[in-house]
View (cartoon, rainbow, N blue to C red):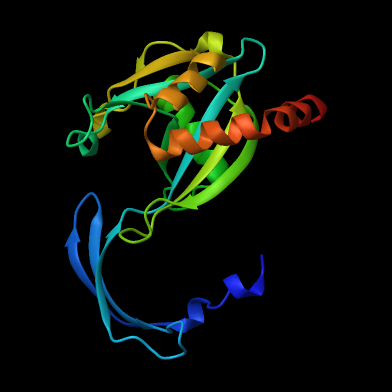
Length: 208
């Protein structure tokens, strides 16, 4: 990347105060900070409330023999305000608990949410979900699985999960991307990455 797009670093932000506002299933904090401006000056103090939910991993399981993805469906209350249905088609995902690796979360969540096992776990991309309001970073993986073993209702009762597993043909998933049936960021990003890198990915799996 050109240096003109790398003007600043973390050293150009001065955090003057972090105040806890709420602590529950998630936490909320107020940050007060100053930052370097593009004209060389320093900003006034900025106050922002930040949603602290930790960091997460998402995994897109794919069966290269059946040409099927394993996707899940569950209710998301945050979608209620803008969606005709808050039941969303998603990839498998979960929070990274203390001491866990990203790969470990992929395997754990795949068993909990879909009852499947993974091989050829491949890191796709890492992104910030909404950095204006949360610190959360998501790490997206793609993995090989046997989709014929994917079925039923899964999830942890202790986490109020009610998750339906779907075997989705590759062509159907592409159609859902194009018509907006899949409209959550992690699933869109994972599927778009897969279709952009499919040939290279499958070659990599064959030679590993």
